Image (cartoon, rainbow, N blue to C red; front, side, top):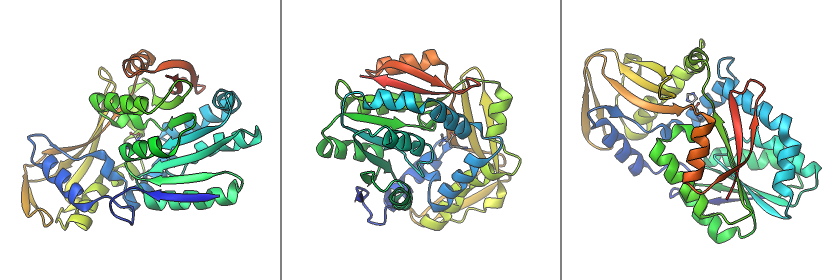
Length: 328
Ligand code: AVI
């Protein structure tokens, strides 16, 4: 039983081109050039990210898979203790990990419906179809849109108890101020009895982290460079993608993995959609992504500041990744 709601401005579910052009122009006009990482995820980018999740070096997905598999009964018991609930999956993607919980909840005959949220209309279409085949009894209402749009929609349309999932260390891609704003916003839509399960990547051997973002097969490089391909495709730009390198480094003091695209030579790029040209010095960089790695204390403080209290922390066997269960 599946239905779909599209909150994005364009009916095909893709991001609004004008907003994309604006963000790109603004980012490339700065002293330190920057592009927002949320634009990684067009059709090709989403496929590349799926490949990343299968890479031997990219430990995050496997670690969270283990956390969810090993603790699914416990988690399901926390979720369904007080009757019917809406399970809201922010950034659901292919929901491969969430399905572990969905199967367990069905097994326990929990009373709930499932509301996956994603900016990719294609992903939500495919997920609805796969759930229809795999869990035909499950009530699914997929929402296509940005997180903030979806939260507002939920406020008006889902009135029962809520369990919000924010898995995959997606929080790590926000700047600290943005993660606070995001969590406070999520909190503002929740009531007593509601919960948030959030996946966080923890501090660990810097070499392990470094390798995860510099895989031998070069898929992460492709993923990063795809941003330039996307700008070429959607905004009529003329980036010579071969003249940029993927470069990612980890700062253990801050616990931040930073990804860049570095211009191999002095060059100019023109973007038709905005009519602007941007020049690059040789070895000038574009900052494209941050991936934060946390201590549990930081997560506890972050939660507290945003109105959440930790109910339980679920770790993988290496203690490198955690799914943190918060109450409000
Ligand atoms: C989606 N996000 C949590 C990934 C990460 O690890 O920061 C995106 C990614 N970037 C490079 N590899 C994977």
